[in-house]
Image 1 (tube, helix red, strand yellow):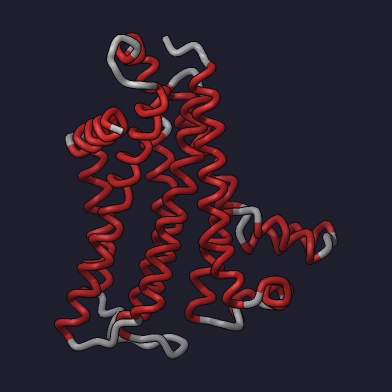
Image 2 (image 1 turned 135 degrees about the horizontal axis):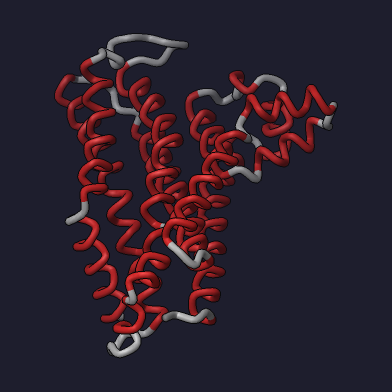
Length: 275
């Protein structure tokens, strides 16, 4: 446990000294500031106003920004240390490979998630001062969804980092993975269904395997119980899961995917040629 905590602390300290963390924190803080300055809390769209509308916008932006930031920064963790020769020193220290690997992953989770949470809590504090009603239940579930999304892409990122032999290859692969997942959202799937006359169930199954789509749809279900924005596909999802069941699926599936990816990455890391 001491080795785990030391690895996590060192990864946090190293990340805080880098420029990417400053940019990362400014991006999410800037999103909230711009949203407040633009008056999103004062407008009303489809019945949503105040912090509810701000929460919808923030969550959807996190879906596009958070995964790529996590992937690009995480994939350099193992591959970059391998290139820098860190493992040669690691083997001489009284710390196990498992403690170093999982401690590094835990430290990276804290670094990538705390700015997201801090920006969201700052918006809530501002809303309380202004007298807005806070949708506490939706806020708590959305925070849990963000934890699940961050854990998913941390696991995918460290798996890519464990498999890649160089940091540049790891970054290129991470960007490709993010791009493919982003492409297989609603519009691309609708195009595939229309062009190839694929069964709706197959398209929905592909959609349910995409963690980005699962996160997006689960967050939508909190404010749109009938998922009217999805059109006819909503009936397939609601008949199979129900609203509450789909939100639970949206919480568990990305976490399981990230956990499996991280575990496979550890097995590859432990059996590979470290130096």
